[in-house]
Length: 361
Picture 1: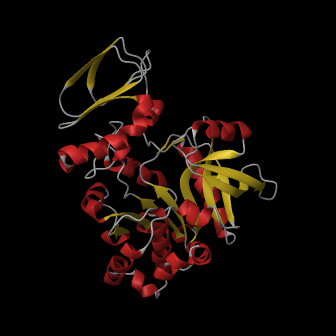
Picture 2: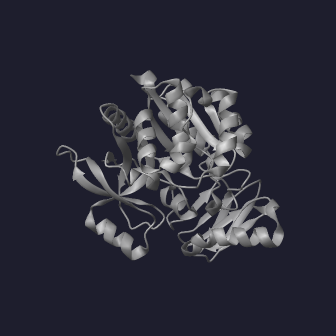
């Protein structure tokens, strides 16, 4: 059964909220944040090697990152790297992957993984994927992995659990998916114990995924509805280059997972973080007695508390008198920002682009 299991890793995002470390030319999935010698993308691939053979791994990324993906994953065949000609969110990418996999193996099942998340509980992750594959292979089912919501995080989307599946304590129908609620609504979600953090990890048989798109997003599905041979070799690249710019952007959560009557969620504590912000990195990193985090740099922090300091290159960073701040320094850009204002980093990036040019983005 293992040879019929595939993994699709999404690695085309821009990751502007981690500026100035994450750049358009090198988004966060290609960065070694923890000084381990592995980028987030490489860690993601290693995480699934025990469950999916390397020849069944599919990478989807933007054309501009093709060389970076090949450099970081030299063991992955070039024909298994699918290059998007333009960004169109996750739904078109998942549908493309489903057709590509079905053309190779009509009975295949696959898991879709973000390339830039952190999972600290590897054993729990392995077990959740095994259960997930077994579940979707037994019927026409779509499955999401949900993580117990331990705080009212406003950067995450949430999955509301519906009726349990056959009295299961961990498997439920999906009632709804809520995208990044405000603070007060997030508190309500957590208190209700009905909501899970959405880990962005989805499983299903390739045929089941295609059927869901045909049913729930027929306009998008019709663009991809061609003979199987169009999803192999040069014909695939030419076909995608033609249709992709004509497709609307849509997240897979709202394309099929939130609409389908056959969508389920498996609750599992994975030690998960989507690592979407500097504060998220601070939260999972080792801290000193004052709650400060330093990333890959030599630093002296005086009278500082709950800060995160990161720097590139051979330099020493000295900071005095800051509390709850981000200090991030690269060769041509420096960010000093309160952690509570980090949601404004995207606005800062846009302002820098407009005033100083794209070389700093």
